[in-house]
Image (cartoon, rainbow, N blue to C red; front, side):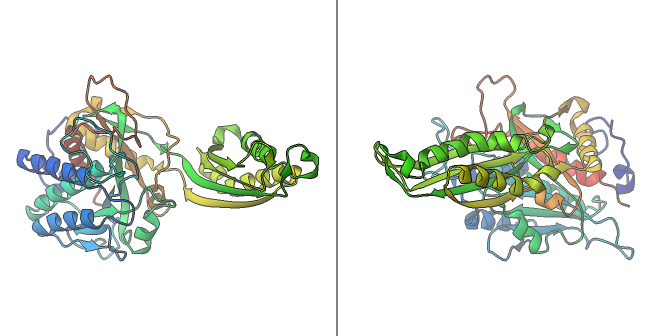
Length: 414
């Protein structure tokens, strides 16, 4: 079958009926070992030098020419000819992985590949994402050598996804999206069984910003609060009243929510303090409401602070918009998964309140993110992301490679 006819396979194609590019057992075993090595040596955002070197070495061994990003971590690698013919063409397909870890301890007790770095862990599955894109790249490079890759593909290994506002902005600034027509990614989901993926058209994650507030005022004796700025009360009212006030100033369907993670003030029971600090997050389901969120939230904080005669200093840190999956890219992933594993391997998924800086790519080019199932089928233990005991069923690596290789083969050539 020619590459052109492969690219036109219907969405209900049966598993492995026609697509080349299956993952050899020897390469799968190598990828599992690669993932475990990353898991044992997690690196935080913008510090992923060892991780970058390991990816680069393996891609070069396959005859590819990866380009390390200007900051020294993360890299980009093209497979196939330069994108866009005389008429510009449709642009190449990009596969994106994030490569950083989290600043939390690995608490898995019986695990031969647990983190060897104190207070560092791949507790969000980025080691799996990285391994999946690497594996897909190696399979697609082999297909290209055999003349079976219908259009070029770009691999993007992005640093610092966990650092607001996310490393994606610097990757884009480096030109990584030049010539890209569509971009796809996966994110581990411990609520979905390995062997399956979750898909959703439209928003699949939420916007996430960070909020830091300092309140100041003349303190004093708790016997005479009327002569002071009662800063503890002021901080408490900001904590309780601002979320309610914000919720009344936007359409409730936008899901704009302020949630606090830290409040700190005072040192003695009979002293009204002069300084208070609060920190939290602002999350939003709707991208239009997210664009208005800073003005709405800051106005609400100032309103409550002024009511209690407290001086406020607000640091509103823009994070990421929602990941909004393009319908065509979502259906490409559905067709790819169906072609490899059948229609039953795809399930609908809900919009998450988590943030993901993959959204910045989708501000520039269309694309989609799939939820990659990493729960061992039948497992009863409830795990979640960003927890020290997080782990993934490594069969998900094979599934992710199959998904991406099929997407590259099914992606329209014109």
